Length: 393
Ligand code: SF4
Image 1 (cartoon, rainbow, N blue to C red):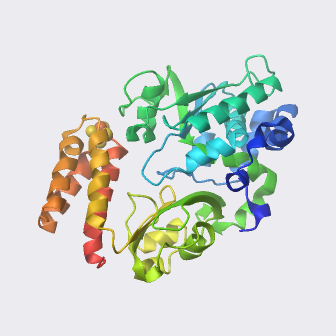
Image 2: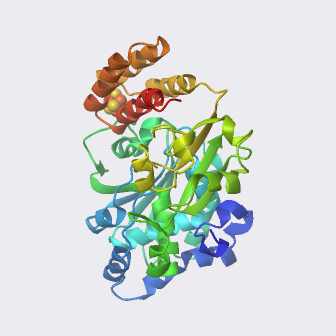
Image 3: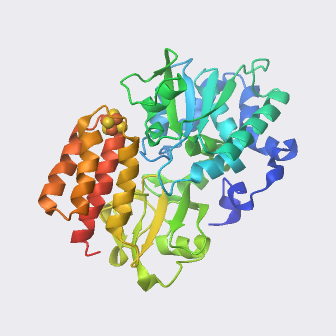
């Protein structure tokens, strides 16, 4: 992808003087422009509705359609606390592109006539937290946002508890209210409706509006149009985070951005294209894989959060699945027995090499009875272990 096509050039340049207003004002330009036009709310909604945007989180949903249904005076929450293994793109984004993040949240607040936004970063992401606070201070000083500004939009920066369950919207809202981060039926925050989406989706809005509909439409493959931030980790020379358009070749991305694999491609066992809860692709499949949902679906996997993990033949897939399941087990909130007890049971079955039929039955039980996506993701991860058997890994 050309450098000029990137929305988030600073995640590669890692320019720390981005807090200076001379750099930041470019990022805030769409918001400044929107504040000066009469009837900004309707015009912004109209402009954004042209871009059918998919949310860039681990559970892609239709961002634009959902945005059109947001009630006025809602809480707008950008979630950068999705903390699955290999998924650290949101930390890099909030650390190096804080103005784009804040501007995206402020823009959605303006479009939905809301006055409160919130960015939640991972509990351990200290640098992201500090970076966002510095950027917010500058935006307050310039009178763009803040209680004294004409927009009257305030944006709070919070750190999550660091639990995996904070990836679940309702658990995150409970956490923001000071409660234990457990999934609930309540989708409100302090009795107001809340609109929670992945932080990258908010941050990309300014770039989309600036580059225009034609640029956006030419990128990617329907329904995944535009660009996305991906991360690559595991057995590669240089684990990294990069921005690429949807539909780019998987092997080309690993070669270009991560410096290739540690040894040779013939040593690669499999690649998880969407992090630990997507199905692994063995050589015969990853060689023809492209980074878009349609292609990966045909190959029996999914893009999810776009966190590529490369394993080599010397790695044991069952060990990998086993350890990852342990993380899920430890972070299960315990509300549903299928998840709390079921994950540990399936983990033991994988360890004991139990009959596949038995393991599959228990995985189905976890998936069908889990109250939130935590249990569903754990089941999908365990299924990847079975998947390897029929994919000959
Ligand atoms: S699926 Fe797991 S994490 Fe989610 S509510 Fe049930 S026990 Fe809690």
